[in-house]
Length: 284
Ligand SMILES: [Zn+2]
Image 1 (cartoon, helix red, strand yellow):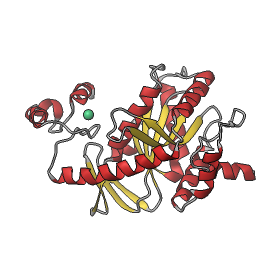
Image 2 (cartoon, rainbow, N blue to C red):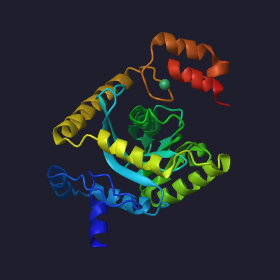
Image 3 (tube, protein in one colour):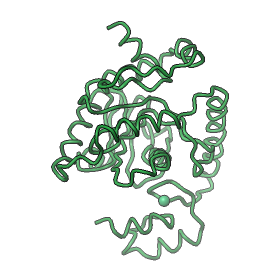
């Protein structure tokens, strides 16, 4: 039991799957970091691990993985949690704000209490999903669900689709994480009773992500610095009102912006990058 609690506290190591013998690829560097990195913010992580431990036993999950991503400005994506289930892979982004969260899936900028700006977390998590997809390119039928988790000190003022279990973009409280994942699995099961991933697939995917995970502390610290610098840059860019895609948050040219705005029927006044212009016309 004690060892289980410790395991839940360890941040940098993918948690052991419950139906498989405990993985032993912890190196010394990592375990040292695990001890030194117990900070207040990680109590939130701990709560999430308790949630993820309640999932059906065929599910496996990894925490805090850093994988290279050629589309990301920093060159990497850092993903809080990845849950691999027979019906879908859940990519979870956790946020530690407190206050009222104002946002809409289609808006690039969200805010806390109407005062503090935050980037649309679903755009951010979209990039994470792309990064995981590129690692798992061998599995082409995987469905991905984007979950953004906030703590109970937040109130959501977001479009209601983000709370509807049919959506593949869901905003949740950390305390309802396992409930939402279980409900979503049930919905997917109804749509397609045959699991997409077998027990072996799940194990292979877990291993593949584990191998792709960069544990080198220097690279990890470099990534954190780069992201900080980039987000400073982003604030300046946003002040200049650079047009961005509402699905992925990528910058688009003035020409693309004009094209989207002038096709009001097709894009409903929203701006999409080339890739998501296609997706937007197949949606509803
Ligand atoms: Zn886009």
